[in-house]
Image (cartoon, rainbow, N blue to C red):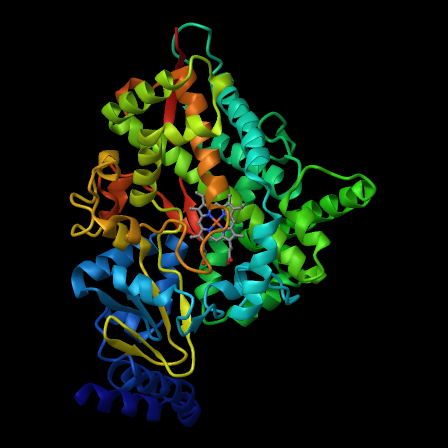
Length: 526
Ligand code: HEM
């Protein structure tokens, strides 16, 4: 009281005292009222969570900027239990039952603006399929997209050829002599070139040939930089402002690099679409036997120009980055757990006498390889933080908790994938867990790197083909090792208390996961 009295006395003695009072005390009192409301009277007030996150959304924006939001969600679940308030109006769960309630067809939720509102970029108003809020309109677009995916045999042939090039380029980048170990190679950027070529082929009918040509190799870093902004901007309270800014020349005038990169990326996606549309005109008279996603979308009458541009921007990012991360992380886990590499190598090398013989059925028989990829995606899912869904009129009950209209709900994929009840010893890399019979049915049910339900990833089958083939061609041809026996990858764990698990691939979540490394040396097999 004494302090407050002195402050009022000070304010009264200063010139412009009533102005000063108004300027400082009014906003401070309003803020105090808002905090008291959020803490005690808000419909989510009883849900536990970190104080800073109950009071304001800025803590979450900061976590997005730092790339550690998924680790913070996990920490909050460890501390407060299976339901946590992660922002004044947002709730996160870490249970299988919540996954099955929130992301199913008839769930009383939709994709609101939180996070998704900025992903399509710009202020032009086109929404990609992923950001389509209306569930019925989404279902119609999804039917067209699913039909536009290339047939399996064509996809297998294309991805097999690309995967072969990937293995050759990896080896070539290390300038390896025919015998002996190569120089050290960072596998992450090469995996990025591969994944961009892949989406070029599946979605736009031809790759940009990044594996061989340097011209477009700036693109993955540009997308990463754009994603950092789009992630924290998408959760910021000033979403509408950022949407507007992206449609102006302010980012280049003020040299705001990550915003400029977001615009540059959107221009690149427009150019890819334009290029495909031009080619399609030329192909009109041909009875083209090849299919790609935009051939189907451009021919459908469902889309307008803006939606098409938004889909182009979405597909390049969605189809490339998760594959890059999963490939790099699998090699990391193999280097850290050499016995798992040995088992995968034994399986792959005994499956065919030459890599030219690989076929869809050979790939299907490589159960251990598939288990390695699944174990990587369990430990290091490319989209590890909770994906928000906005609750509709009438609310939703998740794990017995009523969440009202307007709040957002989500499941922390990273936390669910590390539930020790479902995945014993959750931090160890143990592909064998996927091969055990009989298998705990909850393992598959809770495994959601591609999400579940009507909004789950349509590219799942293509992604498995690509990842299996890329690793097949590497392992069939080469042995791998970490330079000097030290596995180097990702973030520096010493700086971050949540990143000190030695055996874990440390990455940043910026819409999707990003990390450098691992560094690898290769040796051609005798
Ligand atoms: C390892 C590889 C991949 C992973 C882990 C992955 C994961 C995901 C996830 C979690 C979602 C849901 C996102 C959300 O609701 O916010 C999603 C959606 C999507 N993914 Fe993938 N994805 C991968 C590869 C691909 C590929 C290769 C393509 C392209 C063919 C693709 C195209 C899409 C599209 C178009 C959506 C939006 C679907 C919709 O909203 O209906 N993804 N993906």
